[in-house]
Image 1 (cartoon, each protein chain N blue to C red):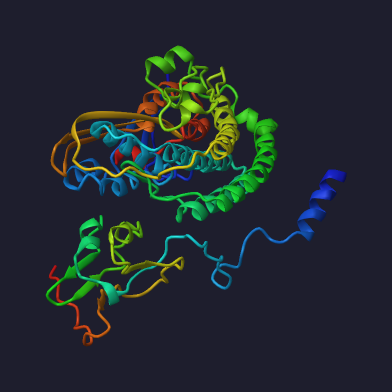
Image 2: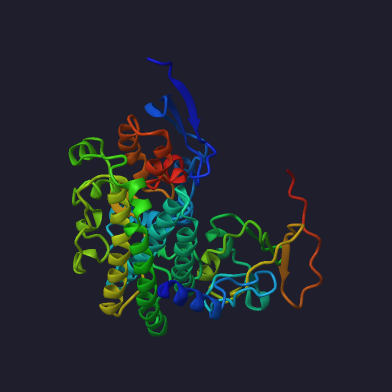
Length: 123
Length: 359
């Protein structure tokens, strides 16, 4: 009985073990693998990232000076990050939010014009 | 003699986390025969491994299993390293041990929770998974992800554990250990749990060896066989003795896993204590040529990877032998004679991982 009472008191006074998830998500760890983004300022469009990507989520078109990135093919392994010699690939700790559509992200050098609409990839 | 009733156990069943079917013939409540039907989650990963670049395969083989993913990556890397004759830096060996043992801890805690749930001990299930979450946090803190941690690469590891992270692990693991100890004592000391597990699904040591059982299933029958004794990564330099229990029943297999949780915690702490300084990975040139085999101890037992390289960037063949596949014959040998109500618990006691088995 005394043991039970101790247990009851401890659980009544302690914080809950769970979090109210959508309202209070857990803080990300500093080194967590999160969103991949490209910063094309120093990019030479060499295509090393696309070559190393195990899922084919990155497509680099040198002639257009564009990087086409499909975030929902990406498995956030960080192989592109390690392959890039110019520091153009960034990975932050924050996770991708749920979405309705899966658009292809287009990256270009800041001085270049507005990126064109992504090409039709066929079926 | 009454007529036998055939009951399909699975592919969808509350105690099975993954789809496998056991076609069970019953006479009254007693099992006469159990036949497995596999192939519900085949994904063709072995073939994909032949079509991919051998370096990118590391990310592919991690996706063979959803629980012991990094151990698959380690086995693949060991096989390719052996085919290429690469020497892995000492620090990478020790870091591999840290991550593999953290993986073993969370896998065994998952099993203990699932077993408790299999006979309706829901509160212990929740408690086990609550403390498992703290181990997952350690994995995420050090490797960046919870399960598919992508730390192994051919020639070493891709991430480092710095002094601060090592300190956090050293502080956190004893706390987890204390809580796990309390829960394990509850689970293994409970009268009801003992009634459901002691003497159920007994695999004698000789039968376990003959049927080729591996891992905790074999060690629960009293055979001290653990691939970590072979000394891959840094295991040869750490004090290591396999946990065995002699009874061969569901209780013994559970006890082996429960004690391995504590053993793995000791291994993580020992590896962090002796962590040498140095490089994380060796740079290499060339491509794998010839056949090589790697045998490692996954949480469920011995995992074998064989790679055959032909000097190109694609492998000629990649073959995976997973522990659950080796344990299924042992499971089928004990089901006849069981009561039908014990089938879920006995089936779960080999900790089946169907995604691995069918790849």
